[in-house]
Length: 112
Length: 115
Image: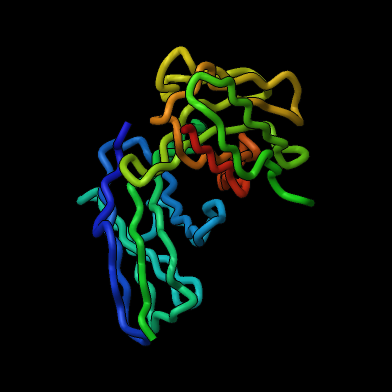
């Protein structure tokens, strides 16, 4: 079932630093790539998403970079804050389908 | 809207017992998903429904697991008999199938412990 590979498994960043999480996918039919954020005791929630017709999408401190030829995409969190400490999941699916595939998750800890 | 509602939030049971998890999707959504989350395997899709019809149950681990969606506002995931290895957090999510965005909204999860 694992069609989306995510790394690293865990990440520790100092406050103010840049957090980078990487994902790679296999199925070239995927055409929608969301990132979900999950806090302890909560369900995942959509953070930001990108379509493959653009190479970058930015929302506040969060940026997705997308490399279609390499079948890779990454999440960058600028000026990381302790409140960003959570587990982040990348995902991929094909619009028109409904079967979203999630990465294994990255546990981010931002130290004050 | 109250979001996706799951019950119970926590369930502790003994091996061999039947467990039923419940989910109420967001009103108007026509797709419903059941996921299982563990430290070892991460977030796994178990089954999903479109318009109350099961579309893909290939993620259901074995015959002990079954899921139903009798109407658009209710779904159950049943484990019978339960085993310790079923201990996990089970999430229900819903979405509106047919839009380009297709965001899945997750419930708070049910933490299941099988002793």
